Amino acid sequence: MKILVLNFRIYSVEYELFEMPSETEICKGELKHIGFDDAILTYTVKNKTTKIVKPVLNHTAGLEFIIDTLKKCCIKSTDEIDAVGHRVVHGGWSFRSSVLIDDRVKKEIESDFLIAPIHNPYNLKGINAAEKLLPGKKNVAVFDTSFHQTLPEVAFKYALPERLEQEYKIRKYGFHGISHKYVSQKTAQLLGKKKTTMLSFHLGAGSSICAIKDGKSVDTSMGFTPLEGLVMTDRCGDLDCGVVIYLMKLGWTLTEIENCLNRESGTLGVSGLSDEMKEVVEEAKNGNERAKLAVDIFIYRARKYLGAYYFVLGGEIEAISFTGAIGNNSPYIREKILSGLEKFGIKLDRKKNDKIIGEEGEISTEDAKIRIFVIPRNEKIQIAKETMEVINGKII
Image (cartoon, rainbow, N blue to C red; front, side):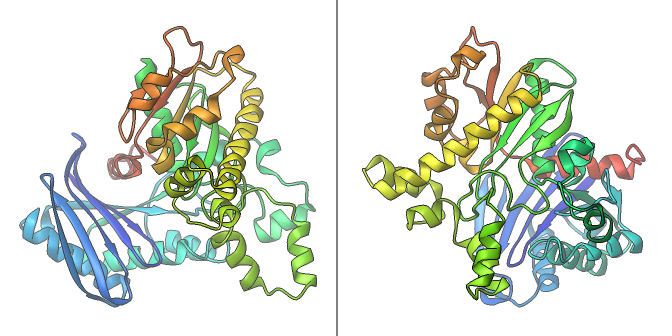
């Protein structure tokens, strides 16, 4: 069974074609700058990477470009594609698992546009494009929020009037669920178990931590939107909502506030340098005080949540795993988050940690009570697996 995995964003789309159930990658790529004359498609087949630049003015044209490329290098015709799996960021409270897409599902995705304005509209554009260009293929929605539908009410409910949840769906949803679920399953496999109790750090441009008990999410740092929680590269994370009220009283518009909190804050806002964490860390090491402060705040917030979720799980955790661009590639950040926690059974092997960059590996000492892993991000294979399970009737 060949499954095409699609992740549509506002100006880009990532794709990967898998042979399932062997989980064999046939090819992958990313199309950037959708809506412009200089759109760039970078794709890889058999470890050979090729780049093409051409005008791509909308998401349908983008998928058509991708399909044409697939037919030139990976498949003879689209008849070989059995199903399409779509990453959908927000499933609201309607979807507890991945689902076969029909008109009802599309309507629900659309109903959450206001909650996820920079994700769901483009996820739906991708679905509509796939239905048009790949007629007759089954499409499956895999939601970032579904994994967190197991949160208990004390964790997902805000201390707000009940009507706000009932009328406006205001509650914690959590995000990065596909990634955290994959990390949970992979960590359990590395421990030789079917499921585990652990902390999962997804650290990247967007960052979150998830407390997982027996393979199920019980709390996570992102909330109603992906803005809550950890400090990120250009998002502020946790913030006194009084700041928003204050800025509005000063005359700031909602658009100005939204741009500030989502695109101008985080380590970028504190450092004044870049939304690339690697650059900020290097500047901090070179003595730049603003960069050092930005990195310290990022680490402090991560340690604060680690401590909170350690106790949410009663201290009985078996592992801590890191994923995401920063989690995978920054031994420095991992070390700073975990330093000084030996009394809790968290013992980092610094030599192992320094060697693990962009690959899978264990970085805890041999006598550590809590094992520590680095697991490369792989949401696409999780989407492919869940798409196959839906098609085969194993997810209802």
